[in-house]
Length: 159
Image (tube, rainbow, N blue to C red; front, side, top):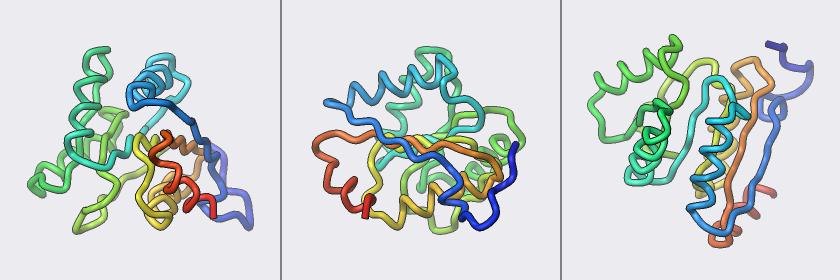
């Protein structure tokens, strides 16, 4: 691991990548390629906009023997704590989360990569979630997938 460069914020310490896709299916194919081919390795959080999409992603990854867990806003606190505990100690490396809606911010440690499967709905949530990777003390990667329908969200983030 490398230390953060002096004078740079956590947000500036990571690489921000954007992948433009034609369809949602293309997003699944990109996710599969990034993970299965180990292009992206280490603790990875996949952010989605709704719980249905989260479980679609979990079952898709399971078809290819990629073990992941979903962290949802409607889960009991004990279950959330258990999932976070095992993720934080390294029992598994893929966590699928909703973009927002948590009453208490989940404490996730040492994230290396964030994949925004769905574009964040507002720039503040993008900065908040991506900054978490930079605070892990590594040169992390934030990859955001964008379709034609999500160009407005991308333009807001660019500003």
